[in-house]
Image 1: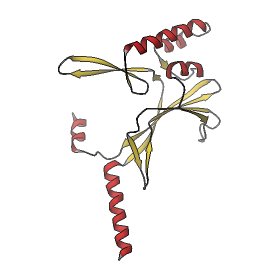
Image 2: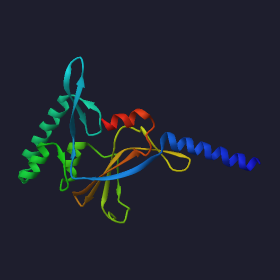
Image 3: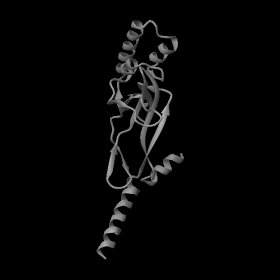
Image 4: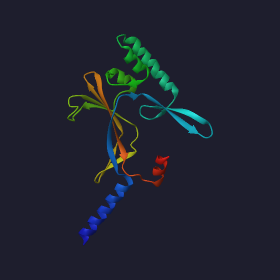
Length: 185
């Protein structure tokens, strides 16, 4: 009888974890990353305004973008062999396949981790991991709970960027009834 109670209570605990926070990992490939993103915000008191966020999702001032654009122009002037497309991507503060390691560091800063890719499709490529600052997601498969970071994985073949992946967690089950209502609008 004690054995059945133990199994039943374990099942109930697991089910509660599942309903409250079951998440699934997602991998998405991107053609480009932006060093800054503009977000239009609506404020009933002041009307619309633009919120500037850096690559990591932190709210920053416009002066950060101006400083980075100045650094990019200096980089372009020092590297006269850059083509028009590369110059335009850099001026647009975009990271695209074909960028060099030096250009990625210029636009995003140093990576959180540098290692060799170990998966079958990317084996032998150098992997740079850029973590977003938040740890607000958790992954529940079977107890224990694993805290995860939303991250960008940049794969380099030699000095050139060849692939951009984003790995993040998506909530599998809506945790409140208001989320479904907001998504329908």
